[in-house]
Amino acid sequence: MKANVLRLFIAVPIPQGMKESLKVLQASWKAKAQGVRWVKPEGLHITLKFLGNVHEEKLEGIKEAMRKALSGFAPFEVRVKGTGAFPSTKNPRVLWVGVKDEKGKLKGLFNA
Image (cartoon, rainbow, N blue to C red; front, side, top):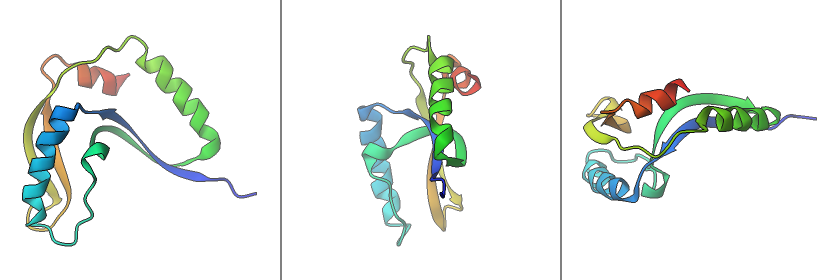
């Protein structure tokens, strides 16, 4: 029997207000990047870790490890700090938004 493989990443959701601001930014980039498949604003997030292809039977273990690592984390704030694209701004495939983590909460979450 062939195991199902999932393409996974660990991400932090962002507040609706920030999504609305990023939606405006995304719209301004659309004119520069014809043919790019854009993520809908509700799918925007902060990626902490890309896990890649993971066999489905490992999913429960990953979820349990995340529950343990995240216990005790409260909501926190980050601010947008810079934007860009790669591989380049002339030929964007991924639009990125930097964040300022003034209290180190995002870094703590990444290290958890």
